[in-house]
Image: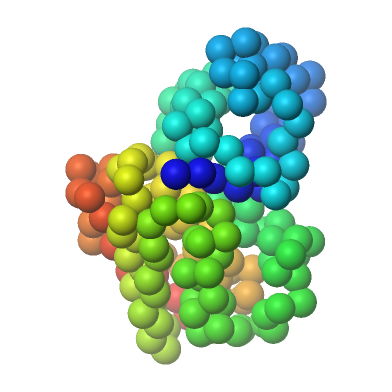
Length: 184
């Protein structure tokens, strides 16, 4: 399984915003000594081995975010914010275009990860998200996706977005199932 370099670059943006460029560079230099994948520049279209990326993410979490896996959620939120306001998805969605965004999301999953599937069933003011077939049941995949979905709905104007976990890797399940509720 591989992950697109845009995920790595989103981590860069989050760490630099919270701790500064010097802290990022120090961390990356130290980590690259352990994993040569990170000695080369990572571009948005670069594909990284997911095992290397998860080790990188776990050490980043330990160094900067006190091992709180909920930081993955914040990473997903920042990625969604960027994609919908400055990135490749800008101008694809109008305000309140929730249903189209939710239908689009399985393609977003496939554009970031080479394994697993995301399925969305959208109602008028709720949506069910299921993630299956990920070969590594890691909270990264759960929280990054939940954060992306939640913030994406908010950027499009949804109010009072809340989530309900029905199944999750963080609970030991082999799939993720969340329900999102939101108002206009």
